[in-house]
Image (cartoon, rainbow, N blue to C red; front, side, top):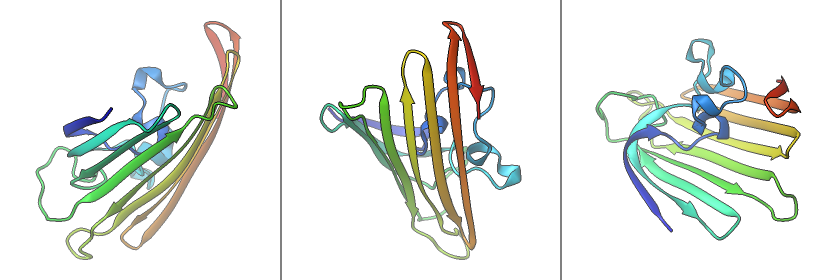
Length: 168
């Protein structure tokens, strides 16, 4: 029950960042995940690494890996010895069908001058049934001396099987 991935792919941070663009509920991802020009970029990153993933029983899944960083080195070769440990855990309680609770984080080894610390910690909650959807995520990050925090809350209601109202 262990999958091993080696290569360049999305680092396991955030529920929405790992979703395919075609599976998103809105046109864009939350800005704190993707918009680097406004201080975002806490997740939705790709990097080279090795990752282990799979189930821990019927209701818990994990992804954990060692990467070149937390996505700051996408599409370039490794230029230093520092690595990042990145992980994500999901829990789906059997008591409430449709509920998913998750946590993710990244811890980097850092050299203050050549490769500043880029740590992340986040939480997520998703509940959905046939008509209603609620999603929320929060993620904090430390990039060198800069501390950041981003979050969103998302409500959806299916008016018809092909029409859903979204409030974010």
